[in-house]
Image (cartoon, rainbow, N blue to C red; front, top):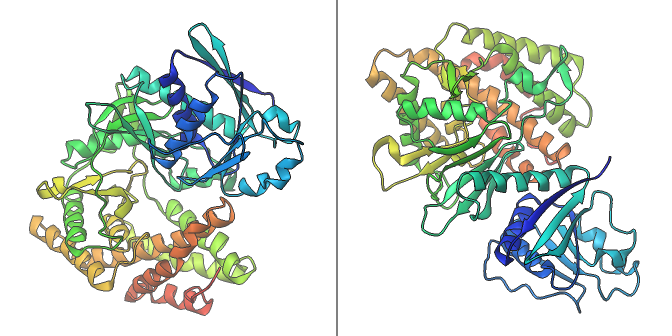
Length: 502
């Protein structure tokens, strides 16, 4: 792949430090950033800012590793700062454990030319040279790491157009997708959130020539988030105000809804789950448009949660979970029985109530704002994958929270609060809801078993495996409903509910 280059003029030390922050936001384990430049060109300033941004510690002491050759720091990811000026031989890199350090961290290398050709493929080079009263920075490279860093520089350009070009950037969170979120800060202003949402990469076809994301109706651009955000705000839901947007690149500058998470000390609180269930009841009692405006003349059509989308999701259990726990692909007998049972259940949902289904209405996507009142206590984020689907799905997503163990008592209180609120608002088919609730809980947790294994096996994210025992417990709870007796028998016959260690 041919190399690419990006140049930025840095008029002062503050601009050099901001460039260090920009690069820090893009770093991932295995990345190597090689710093080149004459003495006094700003390498130390940039390295210090990059390391402090990763550690989220503006006062962190970052001494030069000139004599130690390498200095390591913990943070969002480990970063290893090499200064090879005194390297006696390129092969001394092996003695420093260079390759081992890249297994879970990134490397920042000054004087990389001393290592001859031992820098790994994909290394990104940043050259700093004096230019007038400032410096010229030239970022060059090829491959995925360079693309990430280039995109981070584009996000800084976007912030500049929004009047936030001098903002301090700090990583907030990422998720199972390619999206990432940052906290951006300016003196004298309330913090804001920057969303970095690259266009969706569809991946290979999995059925009928279509990619998984096409069948599951995953949002392909940030326009979906903007459109749903506007609709939900008009419907009385506390979602972020969007101050600036670049829909082509996938950048948003948004309101920071608050810093208090939905959980307390990592544990669910019944009062908060009940409040969230009542918010869902309010939302589900409304009529929603399915053609939503993201920008003048640009509309987002909310897709349906149709049987094809439901089935391709539950197939993740067959495609990823079953091979992981049995050591062999799912057999034809299992596949045939699995599809027969699920299609019968999906048919039972046809003709039922539908609403704006947020899809991931659970604790990571809810901000608790206890100082406020009513529904405004709940700030809602991450809803770009919303569909037209059964209201029961969102209630199941909340009550069977994938990231935290919700005890049966809180799960039941959550569902009962929702049912009571729907009854209070007008006619409500409780029996149909309870059946749909069980079906959607089983569907969602079957999908999640597959997704969490896929995140480990395909994407190198083993941390998700720790959630599997919880998801299996949720699945057993959902399958206790009489309407799911056939599916439960199939899962039990094939050992899919047994405790497994991966």
